[in-house]
Amino acid sequence: MSPPDTDPGASTEAPHYVGHRARLRDRLLTGDADALPDYELLELILFGANARGDVKPLAKKLLARFGSFSAVLTADPAQLGTLEGVGPVAIATLKTIQAAARRLAREQARTAPVLAGWQAVLDYCRIAMAHEPIEQVRLLFLDRKNHLIGDEVVQRGTIDHTPLYPRDVVKRALEVGATALILVHNHPTGDPTPSKADIDMTRTLARAVEGVGISLHDHLVIGRHGHSSFKALGLL
Image (cartoon, rainbow, N blue to C red; front, side, top):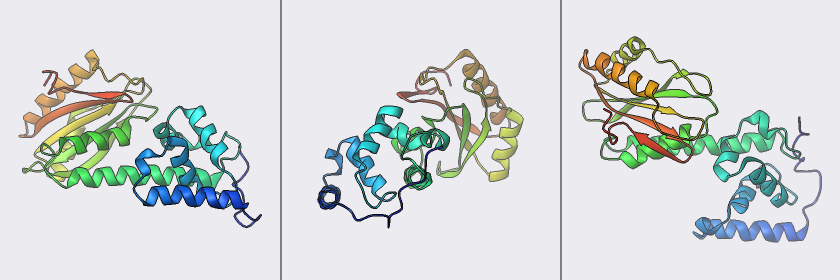
């Protein structure tokens, strides 16, 4: 396990660090955030975990280890902790950013009827699930006006399989008063192409919920590099 993060009061920050940090903050606050490369955005995040010192090498090391900005934020805390210089405060800071991004995306998905704000729904699902290391099944519960009234992970499985029991889905949908559902699950392999098992399970679930007057609007398969929609593919 890596040593704890540097104590903010342990030393005096060198002048060039002060200038560098100030310039990055100015660029962020003046609307230039989109022009920041990934390592500089990570630096800004890590400033909160290490009040003094140069965090640029650590930001670049994180990107090299995990491959992308999003992969750093979604990395398992235990894996983050294997890198020298990444202590509990840095891990908590990174996971806070991940949680904040997920919450922001979820709130945006709630602001309009789901079918009218489909991109917000896709964005939320990608943020919440694209980098999960095991398969999980998420249900989005909708009311009569297709507003999102509930969002729950109902099953977790292995790297390539998650059991889903239609009876449990029907029971939970009735409990929350849903009149429609969107089924979402991730493929940790990164390829969002539906498998035969996915197709068979979806058809079984659609029949089960329709029997109690609930519509299955879509089944989304989320991968790291895209998604598949059963509705768009003509599978539902």
